[in-house]
Each structure stands twice: as C-alpha cells, then as structure tokens.
Length: 116
Image 1 (cartoon, rainbow, N blue to C red):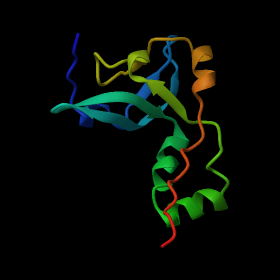
Image 2 (image 1 turned 180 degrees about the vertical axis):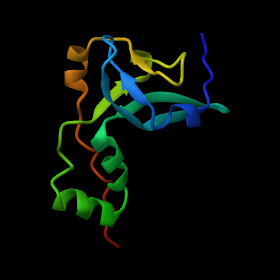
Image 3 (image 1 turned 60 degrees about the vertical axis):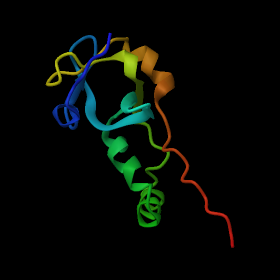
Image 4 (image 1 turned 90 degrees about the vertical axis):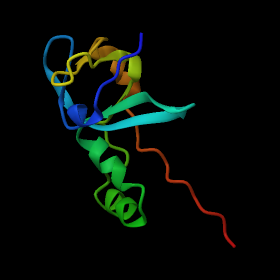
C-alpha cells in the first residue's frame, strides 16, 4: 500500500515511542528517486540529526568536530517501515525502543574530493 504525505507536515514533529513518549523531533527525511517518484528510505530523529545536516559543508564539519558532535548518540536512523506516519501530526514508532538501539548512528562521513 502506498501512502502519500506532505513532508512539510512531518518535518519537525515530535516522534512518539510505542508507549507514547517522545524520542525526539523528526529532523531529516531521506528519500531516493525510483522512476518518477521520490520514495522515503529513512527518517532521522533526535537533536543530533539536525547537526548531522551541518556536516555537508566544510564549516559545518569543523563545528561538529569542535564540539565533538559528530559521534554523539541521540540520532536515530529509523527505516521507513518502522514509523507510522498515517497521522502526520503524531508520527509513532512501530517497534520498541530496544530495536532502535542498533540504529543509533554516527553522522555519515563526508565524501572526500580527489586531489587534482
């Protein structure tokens, strides 16, 4: 079944656990292009997910390294099928928090450019 949700309704929303407790705010939505559609692959939730976006720039990476935020816990990478977005105002996990422990992640390494 395909679900269509306006992303602006999800971004910044508090994500709830199965028990109804907040695990953080939805900071980033990752998607890949499949044919003419963009398909969500994972959601990034937590305070450090916002900082992860900074790592795309040289200045952002320097700031993350300065404050040692690039390797902090507090970032949940949630696969698309483990988050119920049927009510965009109240996204909710579909798995226990214990299953997310192995999904806590470090910021992805920034691609390096080859020397010319």
